Length: 252
Image (tube, rainbow, N blue to C red; front, side, top):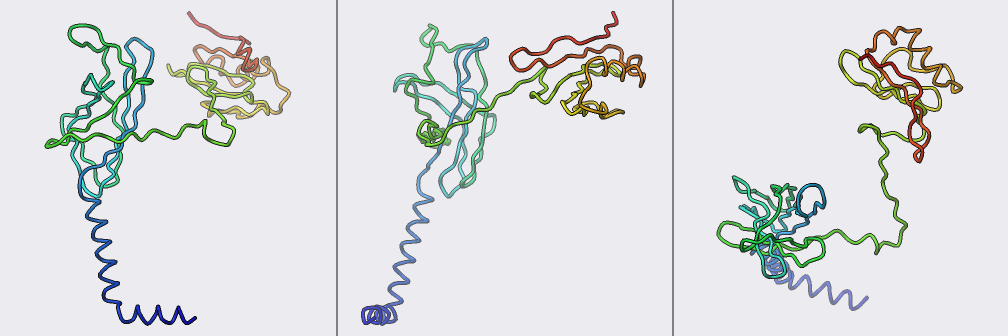
């Protein structure tokens, strides 16, 4: 208690000096935030297709408390080969703390000294430099933390789709039909509901004990077999087996 009282007495006597010191520290910190440039960068690589391995996305972040203008982004491979990854017609303006995602222009392949050059973006050494107009600044690599370092089990996303339409095992039948020259997909689920792009009457098969013939009879009862120019009904055999043809109407 005596030490606390002595400390409080000292603070009361020297509060101006303490305040000035704190202010000086804060001023120095905020000044440091405005001095120099700190640019973070993450990148993604596209492999395959009909062109060479190349960078298809950049995420650029301004880590200083000031606005910067980026004219271009260059890559230096193995401390030897430089090429321009990204360039815009007008400079890219980033405010303090701001990040932006850009897509570099794609190409077929790179050429070096008249010969074809094949870079190693994924496993080689690569540094990025931002052209700020009056200076060239090396970017800080901001790679996402490796998932292997996580103590948790990792769940992965799976996409099962038919012509771009996602589905799972709850979809028992899919009806692909053409109505007013538009291709539509109707999902019939295990409980008998009809949905996805259906939006018509009925929206339920009346129970969960229906089959392909029940769908065919429903289409005939409501006149959809005449209204739809073409249609195909597919039965879901599971993720491994896929779909099999149940019935169809094809006008040639």
